[in-house]
Amino acid sequence: MFDVVIIGAGAVGSFLARALSRYEGKFLLLEKNLDVGDVTSMANSAICHSGYDPLPGTKKALFNVIGNQMIQKIASDLDIPYKQIGTLTIGYSEDDYQKLLGLKNRARLNGVPAKLLDKEELFSLEPRISKEACCALLCPTGGIINPFLMVVHAAENAVDNGVELHLDEAVIALSYERDIYKVKTSKGEYEAKCVVNAAGLRADDIAALLTPPSWSIRPRKGVYYVLDHFDDHFVNHVLFPLPSSKGKGTVVTPTTSGNYLVGPTSDFIDDKEDFTTDAESLRKAKMDAMRLIPSLPFAEAIRTYAGLRAVPSTGDFIVEEEKNYPGMIHLAGIESPGLISSPAIAEYAIRHFLNKRLSLKEKENWNPKIRPYVHPLKMEKDARDTFLSLHPEYGEMVCACEKVSKGEILDVLSRSIPCQTVKAVKKRTRAGFGKCQGGFCQVKVVQLLAEHLHISPSEVLYSGIGSYIAPYQVAKGTHHEG
Ligand SMILES: Cc1cc2nc3c(=O)[nH]c(=O)nc-3n(C[C@H](O)[C@H](O)[C@H](O)COP(=O)(O)OP(=O)(O)OC[C@H]3O[C@@H](n4cnc5c(N)ncnc54)[C@H](O)[C@@H]3O)c2cc1C
Image 1 (cartoon, rainbow, N blue to C red):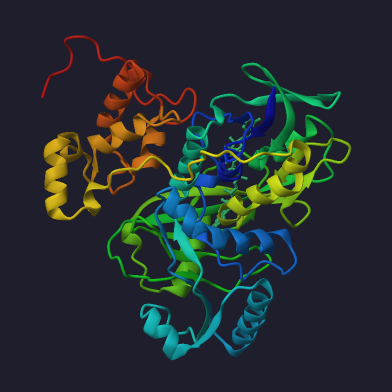
Image 2: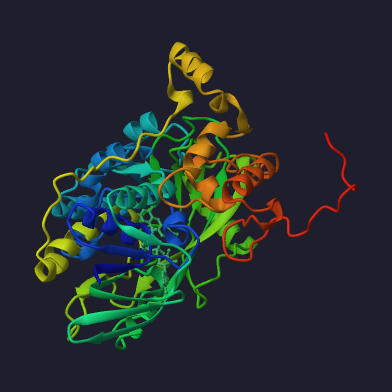
């Protein structure tokens, strides 16, 4: 019998698992994919929004602002790359200036520091901004984070503190009888006192397994360009246009890895599995971004991707207990700014719902920190030389573009949450994220995975079930060594 079963290991489910791991009890995190954070939590803008944009009084405003206040300590405890670089929302006219004044007032109501800048102040911070820009709203508490490590490290810390994680296990049925939930999955059945629905785009499908929800989730697609790391200070802040009814608009933002993201677009679609990008949407993202920075070097584009926002029919995050089903908690419709809100949503769910039902008792030995990761490139030269002489595998480069060593890959393979696909290695170490997009390093990553998993290289998966990279065996005697 579990105290809590969490369905879905995206940012929301993983941060809830970590927050619950502070307490005594039996907690299970179920994820249908082969890795945590493989859906919306890995395909977004990776911005720690300050909270100036959501309407005051909404759950989005509440959790965004609290999440932003929590993130510095979380990033330090969980070794997540995070930078508080501030955000700038750009205006081009007197009319825009009035709108920025309105946003500044909204920021004040949400408790977010914000300052209006004139043209001169704006250009001193961002010299490459369009000459047509004349004003901006600076929110210094906004920032950027590595979204892959945010989820992976939260889940890893939860597991290190005793939470059970089952990957590749989809929830397929739910029932409730005599105060106990039965959670049926593709691999078994579990009993639980509480169930938390953190299934992202599928949250309405999960809710419907118990009772038809009064709300629904519709995917809204955003496509992006990723630009290579060509200049650390090409852009110094997250740059937003003025928000519209379609969202916060196409941004130009640095990432914690030194790349730049350009996107997203914002279009409703019907298919929750459609992660394709298309020329027309990319063209639109490019045009919108060039209004902010006309000199954006699209020759540096190394890939494109799409993410799907889980837009709720209610217009706000759904963070509530299901009526007539005590202990069935929905954390649904967590569209943007859900990444930065997720730690705050987790704390709220425990305080307002789970603790009331479970009377949770704090553990004495909870460890908020993740087992330290080694970062040879951040060491002083002497310290690095000594370290490499003791651990030569950290000097053996696997990914030359992103400078990832064999030692770092072996480390992530040895951690408490399984790392069993090429994409899982890529998300954790950045091997394959560079200019060659895995052209050179992927074969080495496949070999390391095959050795670790005791399988043949032809059985190694890229990401999901069936995603074989090299499904054909090389016939003996037909290949040449060297
Ligand atoms: C284009 C775009 C830009 C964004 N930009 C930002 C931003 O800059 N900053 C920000 O704060 N937020 C941003 N967001 C929002 C943020 O990405 C999401 O709010 C957040 O990732 C949602 O996390 P989640 O855990 O709810 O969902 P997900 O990450 O989708 O996780 C849900 C999990 O549930 C699993 N699941 C589903 N069904 C089942 C089942 N039957 N059994 C078991 N598991 C199941 C899925 O496989 C998945 O892993 C953006 C989103 C998009 C799409």
